[in-house]
Length: 422
Figure 1 (cartoon, rainbow, N blue to C red):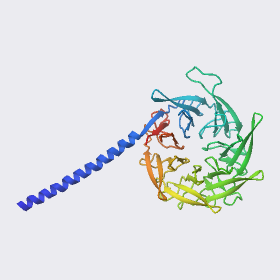
Figure 2: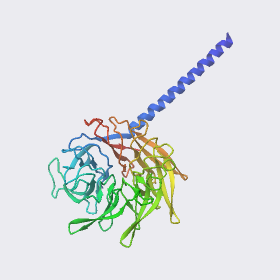
Figure 3: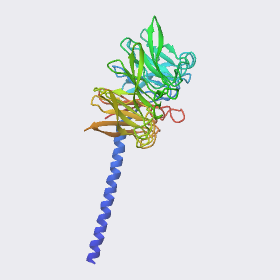
Figure 4: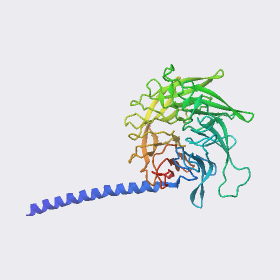
């Protein structure tokens, strides 16, 4: 009897310990979920009306902490809008700056708007313009103080893309010190595979010069094709970018364009190999303070979810290091964002815990990188499927857009703007 009682007590103790352990695990899961919910906040939900819907692009922040962005669709005509987000009395309010009419003024903006040397906004539309191949536009605020609730800005189309260069994609425009504008198109060029272009101002007009026409598959050897994102400058005036296709392995390339004798010479930095180091680099490149380049691929890698990579220049050659294999089937379309400590932040269009996209952080430590998923979207009220890059403020708060979800009446949601507080 005594032995049986001891055995029963031991069994009871084992069961109790298992129950306590299971409860502790459940509590940790609940706390983790609560922590995630506390750090992630939807600060604006698109309605599909004047504010637009489907914000593919990320946000641009001004010195006062206001945000500017584009919505691919919605607005009065359904062709997209440019908006400003301002914090008033503790809540964020969206003000439409311009609604595209869909004709010569352009339609369907995919890229961010950026501030030019004159402090006005510049951007692109994927379609519209003169032959419906996209535009480069400028937005200026009203000349005098506006007292109305809605104060639309004035749009000027700087350039209508022609058959020689068609469909600017997700890439930001950039400026050199002389005020020239640089960007990419996904089509057009000598082989209709995309271009890198420059726009030069002269007497109130803008003249285009195609710096490079991609030629993969048309006698171009290892050249790439279809650049989704834009280009960046180094300190010497060279340009760097990626193409989503083409190259030696048909998985995309990272490239450099160097000015030489009035023209530009292309240098292939890396031919991606899909499974080995990623494929389809939809996002662009960014520099760190040491002159290394960082970017993402949309496919390939160990998880078939794309990779984050570093390109290091050594002895005249560039070596690629895969610093992270992203979430399975993640598909990152965005360029990375780096903070002052050298941490990297990005988004995936799908993947994450619910296969609706994620925001991730990469932290360098001892020569390696630690990947942390900061948030997994559910594509319900919280949004889903982020396309654009994230933006950081001075306090380290993270802001971005999700192209779908939210409570807007768009069938699957109209998209949201979010904040993640560290």
